Image (tube, rainbow over all chains, first blue to last red):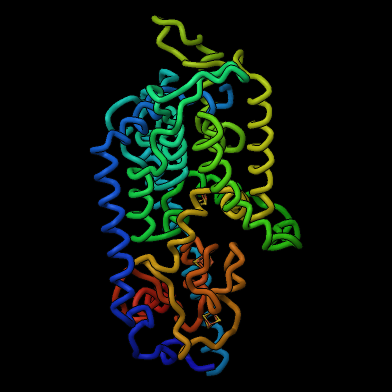
Length: 63
Length: 338
Ligand code: SF4
Ligand code: SF4
Ligand code: SF4
């Protein structure tokens, strides 16, 4: 087997290929951000907050 | 010459693997401490009630932990599904209960958060940012004879689907349509028991219960019942199992890991194997404690992006990252460490 330094192929990582690799997560993140903002203004965030600040009896096993 | 070339990379790779593991542990610990740094909670046996609690944290971090600064996304999802439209409710004479239809059929805020995090990095959260993942990692370090560390067993693969069952039934269907109860938190989740229930109940028992003015614990072991026993049993079973099997909760139970797993294939952070360099030696598969063969499925649902395979590859054939990167970039350190 050759020395590891010589085995390094000077080539871009196959991760790089294709614009879709960036477009798909970007679109999902944009939709996610939209949902998140909608949830904040719709008041859903209050449901999360009120549950998170009162001790959740089910979580701790007494509910 | 040949021998020298063979022995050097071997030593190097072990060192790199150790360094990668140490670095990951440090990041896990730092993030877990950061998101659970409400020290007053630990000192007074209470929980944080400030405005940061509206924000979800990426990992399985119970909001009933005295130190928790944020909200657990799985708890939050169930809390939203549990919200009822009381003004449109009715009294059910049969069960003598008031029934309110769900207010939210879709949890925009929590799902939006999970989409954002998932599309950004998928299960990288599991590898680096989840406190319950860290706890299992630490327990797995408990030394037992090598033979007792179980890499796989008959039924391992089908059992991995169990987490999707918990997600669909316990986190979505039951809390949304059956009754206003966070079913996964109540009947399964060991995280709530371990970092919420045990510290709070113990504090309450030692220094006093809820009574105003005592300023101490908000619950105590006096309140323990059958549910406590069930949850303690599940927690103990999973924690003991973690000594022998790497991350059993993540592999078989966690609904949050199940959600992030769907993003592994499309997230910005991705793994990939350079076929031109890979000699199919199997070092990466051997290094993976989640049972993934990265050369076959670089973006497997089970991959927690821990980086062990990447550090173990003698050919530097595995690359990971958010974007453009030379394949030999990160692993170039392998040569420097030696
Ligand atoms: S599978 Fe669940 S518990 Fe495990 S690391 Fe991922 S989010 Fe945390
Ligand atoms: S360790 Fe590297 S060379 Fe060996 S099989 Fe895995 S990717 Fe291929
Ligand atoms: S495939 Fe690699 S990164 Fe994924 S879990 Fe296994 S060792 Fe970790």
